Structure formats: structure tokens, C-alpha cells
Length: 257
Length: 308
Image 1 (tube, each protein chain N blue to C red):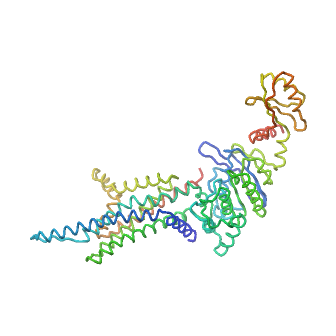
Image 2 (image 1 turned 135 degrees about the horizontal axis):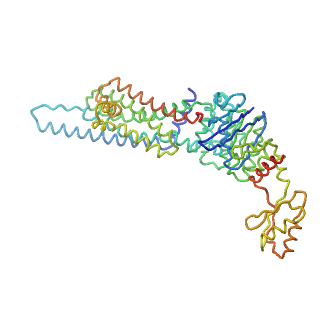
Image 3 (image 1 turned 45 degrees about the vertical axis):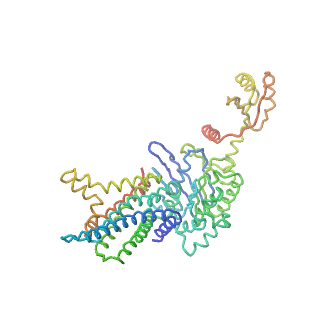
């Protein structure tokens, strides 16, 4: 535990001691804030228009589905770009700078290093996310919000972040070049994101498999307010799976040829 | 303290370390000497549990490097060729981090860090960013990192490479101080360095141990013969034949633009050689004594062993 905290503290200091944490938080908050603002203005225009039109049939306008849901959907998309930049340095930088030799020749296991690094990145992710929830907080002062879908959306964000980060860490453990690590994880996340497009052209069993592997498919219900345990299990096991793969990659160097 | 038993490390078809065995006793300073690419770094990386051995094993302080890596790592301080430093950390912060991962008890930590800082002459640099330090000071931080947890064994890979002459003297001095109560293995490709720091030298060439000897004996080998480089104006082949007939000259070989002339160390044939060149009516452009290169020492040593 002490070893995990040592690595965690070092990574945190590194994130906040350099511009990375601030720049990435800024990028994320700027884009997600922009989307939030656009959705809000659109919602406003629509409600004004409906009022003026004085239409016979009542159209239900819901601030949750018009503003909050698209906000969550767009967030996960921005994270696909931001997270590779947070994870790319975790192993690649240590390998390039020779400090990996220090870690690996210290009485600390590679699993402890991995968990410490994962937790540091995850806590940073959750901190930035928490700031984005400020937008919803402001909205709640002026609108009647349905908190159920907001909590389930928050759960989706918490879960998918762990998966994204574990994919990014795996990419970082494969190379000593940070750019390659970022591109690899970016590529892999997009692939996992859009894999269900391919599903439409596949048949039977492949349709089911591809559909199941798609990250977008597993977030959709949760963002709309339906928490299904199989989605929760999917994300937790996906994160665990990629971390396990990373562990194998790191340990394999120590296997006897 | 260190027992290496038939250790072999292969990278695919390439054998970096080939069946080496040796022992190092407590308190010894042992130098790995060999040209670049001889397998020194690989051997050290295997001993520090950074790389696995393909065959064979080693025990450090009684613990097997393959079965008990954590116990081995607790007892080893390692300074790789490139000091493993985080450039964006301050010296003290860095050492605090290293103390944590090296398993220094929190109560001990402060005292150990202060000691290491004092020993490595870093007292007035503790608040500086490592990235702003000169190469010599970075090497000191690397050394401080290696001794921080008071290890029984210190392994250093080319501790003086890339330093200027003053820094080299300081670092060698430091190594001797640190070695007083510890067992040290260091690698180098510079012969005088082992003379100055080590009790024993292990010469590695192409992954194999070529010789194990004291530095005194080793340099004695190289002093058996004297070698002169001679540059002449005129036909080099004729001159070579003429010089070879001088009584006492043991060998004459062609070197680039001139000749290498060897004779036993106790004789001084420089006058005879220059006189012979002048007799031939040729010009003596240059004549200088040359030190034997490391490769030639290996050659001499291997020849020597075959003769015996």
C-alpha cells in the first residue's frame, strides 16, 4: 500500500507540477462547456418558438433530454481525445528517461507500480469531471432537473473513464515513444467506439459480438437513465482486462526466454 | 556476497553474456572491464533483476535473483549508465520518492536522505530542479539514489562516463569512500580507472570472462613490451624489413601511414631504430611511444593464456 501511494504521489506531483493537468482540464472544460452552452441556447430557442407558435398539440420539452443527455454523450467523445494525452507518458516517459530501470530494480512489484499509476490518472480524471458537473449545478439553480438520469450519467462517466484510462496505459506500456502511445490508444478507443457500425453489416453471431464490444452501446442506456448491471460489469471487467494485459506486457520482460 | 553461476543471457540468436561465473566477497570493489558491447551492462542488468537470465543464476547476499527478486532488490543499490532521474523533480523530492520505493522506513527516511546528500556533496543543491543540474551533479544524485537505502551491494554502470576530468576524480573519490563498508561492482572501459578504484578486475570480451586478475598484474602485462609508432618518408616495406633485423626488436607491423615497432620493456631501442632509418637515407617524420589500447590488451591477455 505504501508503495502504491508513493507511485500515486509521484504521478500526481508530475501531473500538477507540469502544465499537463491544467492544459487538459482546460481543453476538456472548454469543449464540454461550449457544447453545454449550445444545447442550452438551442433549448431556449425551441421553448420560445413553441410558446410563440401556440400550437394545438402539447410538445413536451425536457431539459434533461435536450441539455443534460447530449452533454454527457459529447463528454465521452472529448475524453477519447484527452485521455490518451493523460496516459501516454505514464510508462513511455519512464522508459525513455531511464527511470523505468529505477522502478524495476526497486523492491516494489510491477502490479504496485501499475495500480499507483492507474489511480493517479483516474483521480485526475474524476477531478476534472467534478468540475464539469459545475455546469449542471448552475443549471439546477434555474431549472427543474430530473436527478435520476444525471446520477446514472455520472455513473457512466465514472465507469467509462476507468476503461479509457486502462486502454491508454496499455498503449503506453507498449512503447517508449509518447506520441506513438497516444496515437495507439486514440486509435484503439475509436475502434472500440465505432465497432458497432461494423455490426450492421455483419450477421448473426458477429452482430451480437461486435455490438457487445462497442463502448458506445454500453453507455447509451446509462446516459438515458437506465442502469443495467450487465453494462456496469462490462466496464469494470474491460478496465480490469486491459490492466491485466498491461501487467502481462510488463511482466513478460522478466520471463525466461 | 555475490555468487554468479554459469550465467547466460541471449537476445534471440545473439549471446550478450556467455556462461560467466565468478564470486565477489564482502567489501571487495570489483571492476568489469571491457570494450563497448562486451556484455557489461547486460550482466549488471541481470544481477539487478532488471533482465532475466536465459540460463544459470546468481545469488546476492544468499538470495537467488530469479526466485527472490524483491529480497535481492532491497540489498542492491544500482546506478545505471544513464542516471535514472526525474528531471522535473527537486533533488530532495526525488530522494524522498526513492526512499519510499526502496522501502526505507519513514522514521529513518529523513536521516538517510540527509546522509546521502552529505556523502555525495549535494548539500547546497537540494532545492534545485534535477533538470537544471550539470552532468556531474546529476551523477552525484544518481549515486545518492543508489546508496539511499544503505544497500550491502552497489552496482554501478560506467559511473564516470561523460564527466569532465575534475568530475571523474571526484566521483572516483566518492566511490572509494562509499565502498568502505560495502561490496561494489562497477563497469568501465577505461583501464586506468580500474587501477585506481578496484581490488579485482574481471575482463569481459564478447560476453565471456577473458581474465580475472588484480589491477597490478593486469597493467604489468601491458608493460611487458614497449610499442613505438614510427612514421617515415620513403618505402615503408623496405624500412620495416630493415628495422626488423635490429637486435631486440620483437615485432614490426604496418600501421596507418607508418609502422608499429615493439620491443621488450627493459630495453630502449629508440636510438637504434632511428639510426637505422637514417642509414637507409629516409626521413624520420614522427616517432612516439604508444599506450596499448584495451582491445590489444584483451588480445595480449588471451594470447598469454593460450601460451600458458
